[in-house]
Length: 112
Length: 113
Image 1 (tube, chains in turn purple, yellow):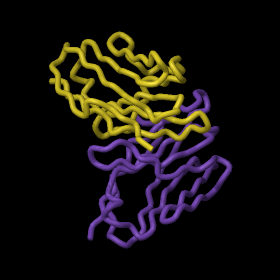
Image 2 (spheres, rainbow over the protein chains, first blue to last red):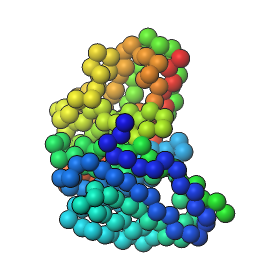
Image 3 (cartoon, helix red, strand yellow):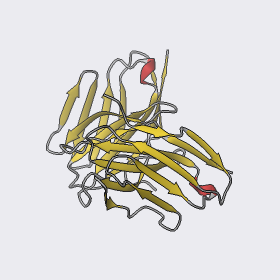
Image 4 (cartoon, each protein chain N blue to C red):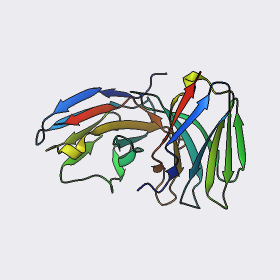
């Protein structure tokens, strides 16, 4: 199974907030990332957080990092239908520069 | 700025046949990655190049997969012979010298029948 774990599915109403959760394994990870993948497309980097930060906000996106519990979350405010996609959490592995370990992805479905 | 280009976008082959994928990274990006994404899973790194040298190929099934980046720019990934379990999307990504941010191409969807 995946070392980075995510819930598989999230349904949310348009206009509500979405929260996607992730747990990772490498306590020494330098960066943690959130990617978005729309059908038939590659991965789009949404945001990332450096491991010495607790929170990062970028417009509608808020990333929270709990290093003690190795827990990462992505909050999307005012979720829109265009936010429907698969969201991947990824950690950078300290034993290999640039190497990312991805979770299996959370499919987010936004309903009108 | 042009993104990461990949071709073909789709390929259907029979098992035991050979196939090759091509990737052109973003201009100036020294690091190039090939990932395999099986349906329902996250991408798994196959091989990482720094310029034309291999940094990590620990997850590459070397009995059937090969990859090269001869001039430090474009890269090809080859599977010979293909197996049914190779059906997946093959993603190429690149990152600039200054950081680890990876930019992904649209991928090649391979179906092995």
